[in-house]
Image (cartoon, rainbow, N blue to C red; front, side, top):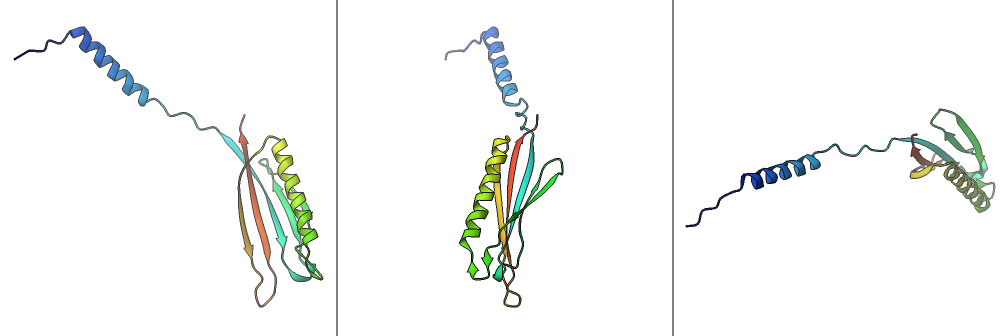
Length: 135
């Protein structure tokens, strides 16, 4: 039967290598980038007859707020596709302006309150979230 003689220096180098590999894997995880968020919301009226109010509201991280008028989905004669197109233009312009200011689009959340049989009133709301790194 053969015996296996281990060189002490080879054993030491092996142990040090294993410990170095373990230390590398246990190093601190990379820091997550710090970001700041902002949002703007659109509330579009789906009240027949054009009686509702539609708005685009922006809240910046510093708490400043702006509010812009949007057009209602309905007019006196029914659905007003021109109003919907104009709202799309205003919303797209807002998104492009924010991106030009260094904001990155993060996500959108939508919802609606549908008209009921009792009052025929409703809204369509969208919340647009943007983020950018904190410097």
